[in-house]
Length: 426
Image (cartoon, rainbow, N blue to C red):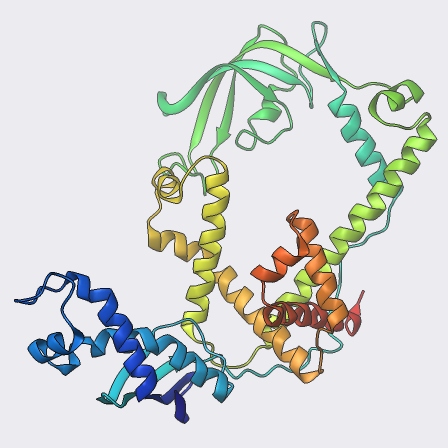
């Protein structure tokens, strides 16, 4: 098998002319014969025992050619691609046999290739990242969350409802004096200030007392999900059954010892500060990377084959399918529940798929320009990380992930580090 010619025929389209020698072709024909002969009936021979020469005489010498060529195409084409040093995209391949005989055959194949892209201005990118500073305010916010989790609920008998109270109400909504569908509820737990009801509703419960009946007036938002109600005024009749309040524990050493390993309030605050420092640093790093990605994606220049986007959408749907199956559903059932068609599902991933394809191409190009490569030490480190992540033996990981592919991933990661190091981050 040999590469006869290799030519770019269009943007991201490449044509190979490949010749397969007679010896390889004859071996493939014999292999096909051995597979198919058991299903061939020839008068005078037991089924499956007819000689190849007899079958060829009866049906023509070319009887096994097509299947033999189908067996030889993949390797012959891959060898040609490797020899030409062209990187192809998983896409439709146009094949055309130009010559065939018992001495071999020649075919042409047109494939989709990786785009030739350009990227400039990836050094000195200016971004403003979220702050990783641990402030007293942030520490107090974490303490308040812990106190909320440890809080208790008590009924209120001696005062009207106020902001933050938990109320138990009956309500029924009317428009133009007529009750509307979906506007009624009984013994509903509503926390005032939660924003779970339409604007203006919760605030009008403030000041009313237990067992009181009253009316409130609101206007539905213009973008309300029910068209008939959007932008319309409505009246709600309310019966206030209960008022409850959340009692927070005091911030003292006893509370601290109940919710943490610390012994004192000061130790607890120091523990929170340490955890916050780690969390905020991770948030800042993620924010920096996301903002750099957005900038790099916009800097990519070149015609990218649609097949690359479609392949990435396929990958993302497979990932989603695995997550859905882990929850006991299959993708088809999920789509039925969600009222989604295959096209709807694919459309949901279009923007993210485009972003992922472009950032990969951008970072690969930066790695090429800056001569960023993965050395053996970095490669081994990456294999070790994967093995640890998936609880596998490192040799097993190596058998599943070719070093050539993992080197590309490591180089892409190093390219992102390079962009970060050369960015102007505020």
